[in-house]
Image 1 (cartoon, rainbow, N blue to C red):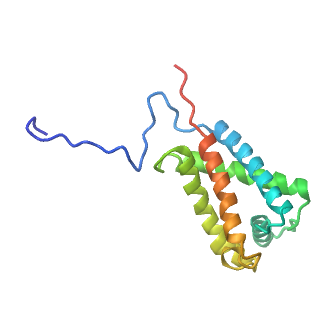
Image 2 (spheres, one colour; image 1 turned 60 degrees about the horizontal axis):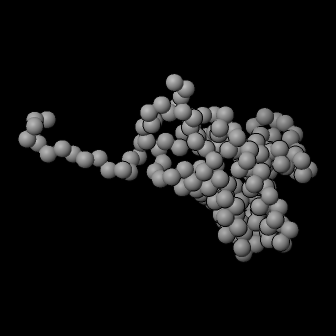
Image 3 (cartoon, rainbow, N blue to C red; image 1 turned 180 degrees about the vertical axis):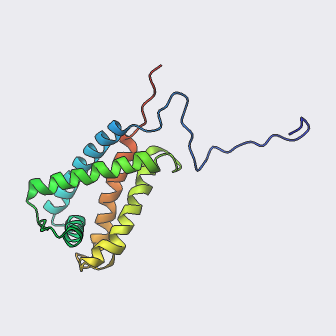
Length: 175
């Protein structure tokens, strides 16, 4: 480019966010912490909705996953778990979700962290609402659970997404 050509200015919004000077590519230990905290706070919100008499979900992902593992592996994993088993499963899914968010999606999504997490988790919610819940016989978006289930399941997923997006930050490299 010669000196008479106008310089092209880049915009603030980029699909790919290169690392800030001194920033690591990703921080799995911070993703695990964000996943644990996000899942535990989300579990509290789920418990509160149940206490308020709101039918927001059925633990459908665990049922769907275990049924498929049983078919594929010929195992007999239980499709129902007690409260401790449910929380361990829910927190494990939260950690795996946060690791995928941090390792794959954090850098390619626009906006502040909380918005990136929200967008990411609503993508997961769409898969649940359009595939998992109908497969379980709960209708698209969970309308077979209750008329308000789509709103509450979206809201609970949004809460988790905002939390992991807000909590996760790649760590700066040590000098």
